[in-house]
Picture 1 (cartoon, helix red, strand yellow):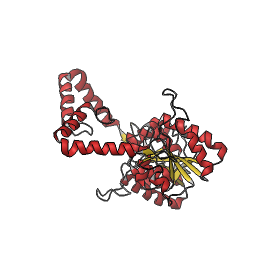
Picture 2 (picture 1 turned 180 degrees about the vertical axis):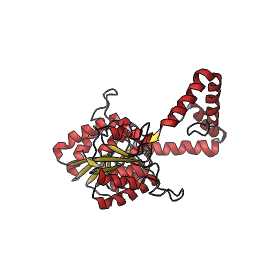
Picture 3 (picture 1 turned 90 degrees about the vertical axis):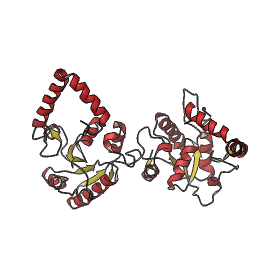
Picture 4 (picture 1 turned 60 degrees about the vertical axis):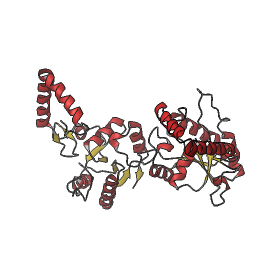
Length: 185
Length: 185
C-alpha cells in the first residue's frame, strides 16, 4: 500500500489496519473489485484513455467533435479536462513526456499514433494541453514541430494568472507571461 | 506584534522575546529605524506608490515609458510586477478594490486620479494587473467601463495555466479559461 502515490508509510499502515479489522466487509470486496478492474481495464486503441473496452466511451461517443484533438500527458489530465466540461472534441493520451534522462522517446509516447490520426480523422486543430513544466513544454514543442508538415492548426493552453491568483503570491515567470500575453478588454 | 499580518501569536512571542533579550543591538535600532521610516514614508502624489519623497523613484525615472500605465491593487503588487523586470512603464496604485460590503467606492480607490492622468500624460494603454479574484475582476470591469470614453487601449493580464502548473492540480475554472484563451503555437 505504501508504494501507492500519495500514501505515506503511516497512512498506508492506517489503511491496512482498517482493512484487516474489517476483512469481510472491506478487504475481501476491495480485493475482488481490484481483480475485476485489473482484468477488464485496457488502453483505448485510438486515444490511449483507460476504460473497460477496446474503444473508450469518449472515442465511441458519436456526439463528440472529430476535427479537434486535445493532447494530454496522462489519463489524470484527461479527467481534469473532462471535469471542466468545456471540451467537446477527442483526446490523445501520450502516456508521459519526452525525457532524455529516463530515455522516453517519441515512439514510447504514442506520438506516431497521433500523427497517423491527423489524416485518418480529418483533424483541423490539435490542442496541446500539456503541463506548464519544462518536460511538458519540451514535449509540446516537439509535437508542434512534428505536426508542422501536416498543416493542421496547433494551439496550446493559455499561460497566465490562474483563477483566484494574487500577483503577490505568483512567481515572476507567470506574471511576466501574463503581461506578455495581455489581452484587450 | 501579533497584529502584523503573517505573524501568529506564537511567532510574535518568539520575535518579541528575541528582541527583549537583545534590547541594545536589536530592539533599540529597530525602534529607531521604524520611527525614521514612519516619519519619511509618503504616498507618491502621482501613482500612489510608497517612497520617501513626494514623487516615487519610478515616476521620477525619465527612462520609464510614459504612454503605458499598469494599474495594481496594492504596493505589494507593484513590487511583484517590478520583480519580473518585464514592465518599463508607469504604475497606478489603487490602494484596494471596490467593495460594497466594506463601502469602498471609486473615490477611495484613486480612480479619479487615474482618469485625470490619461489626458495629462498622453497615455495610450492601461494594463489592468489586478488579482484574479472576484473583487479584483469587478474592479477591473469598472475601470474598463470608466476608461471607455477616453479611447485609450485597455488590456488585462492573461488568465491561464501558471508556470509549472499541472492540469491535475489546477481548478476547473483555470483550465476552462486556458482552453478558451488557447493560442496558436
